[in-house]
Length: 571
Ligand code: DHE
Image (tube, rainbow, N blue to C red; front, side, top):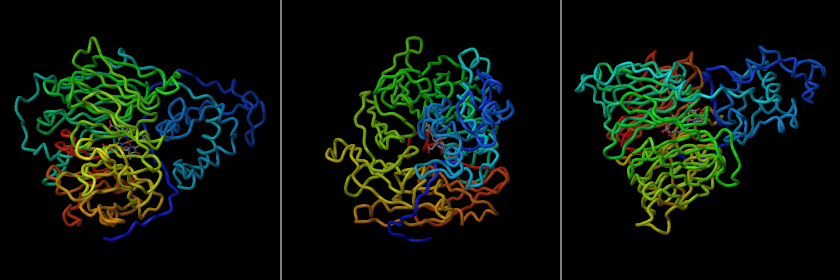
């Protein structure tokens, strides 16, 4: 363990290795090589003459696959840009083949991964992608109610499920762990560290959320498959599944009093839409498109993707953030037939976020705008849009600490630099500090994705999984909350990857999650699919290694969600 004062590192940072995403479904637009010659497109490509087709049909298919696996998350299916720049053909043809080729190879400090020099893409694929970007993006098909219903599978109807908990698992201290590249989640007991079940789900589950009662676990795959798992069964098992589109990142369940376990909602990247489902069966009830006007210039956007979703504690409402149009939708689920939606203008490129410690204010990063928007879920209105002072805020759900000087604050780290921004969240007790950045800290380096704390902990943890320096991407910085009132607070570095002692590879250490009591924090040591990965458990009081969980079934662990903390919004 190492103690460091504001240790800074060079940040040649990468946004992500957003690798392998199973994008299913045929495309609406077919490619006919004969109609796309180099001359017709008005581009120059080394080795190709004007009447040569730019891509063969096979190359086009491969380009489509690589784009969805590696690029669409940041640049958008239609390449209109979000976390990554726009890549529409009016821009790419001007930039030209050589420029695109070197950009993909070397990346950029602003966040484009160095796909070539990192060895993650072959020379051949880079050349293919530089050509692929010179043709118009193909548009995947729509996925409306008929397709959603067709995909719905009620595996165990409610009447066939146990009427009382049939296992002896301490469900509140269970962790749902994404096994990204195997399309599974592992349910790991927070007390014994034993894997209770490994369950097949959609591909590369992004997040897990728990029903208000704590009985049902809902996970969403990158392929937009929602899987509902009954934690009362012995062993816990899926009871329903449904696909809400072809690409997605978010799922949530109704939490307002009287509506516990009643509804679920999932937000899709493609098609840009959200789907409200029956909380007991996942029967799809309503699908709504998010296409429409941007909040500021009021221009039509064809692909406004649904980013984070939370459930209000103050009303029967889901809080749905729409990335490209910059709107937050308060969706009233008390009457789904006559759906009322309050549309709040916030900021473009909304991404991830979480509640303040009271559960009233939702703070969400508009990452490509370097801002955080604050929504009052009691009054259903925008409270503030805050410049964080860092580059690309990326909080996960953020961390709520009791600052020794400024009282309750919420923290985010940044993808694009080493800073952490502490934002005052107490308009009653600390009105002068509310919704302003009260302090800026410097963590390990750029490439941070998630911060974490717990009400019973005096520590604030920050990771840096996307930092290009393996020593930093394998470590975590820890600040002591009660010492934050001092000038230049120190942090402790935990060498998590070293502690895990995995056999080979260059694992990234990602997303801390506390156990129910707030005495331990778990980190994923996320290695390649064919390599050993692990979960490292840290004792929060002493900041020492408590346990390394290794198992051949633990392939590419990423997100971890403690049942109690997730359902109670404790972070
Ligand atoms: Fe995530 C949260 C989208 C890349 C792991 N990620 C989220 C949320 C969104 C999102 C919208 C908030 C969901 C919510 O709260 O309702 N993530 C995206 C992307 O668009 C992006 C940038 C690119 C992509 O193609 O997916 C992306 N995310 C990643 C990764 O590369 C990570 C590290 C591994 C992976 O699975 O791909 C990753 N994202 C996570 C995790 C959370 C998350 C673990 C939940 C954190 C939490 O504590 O709540």
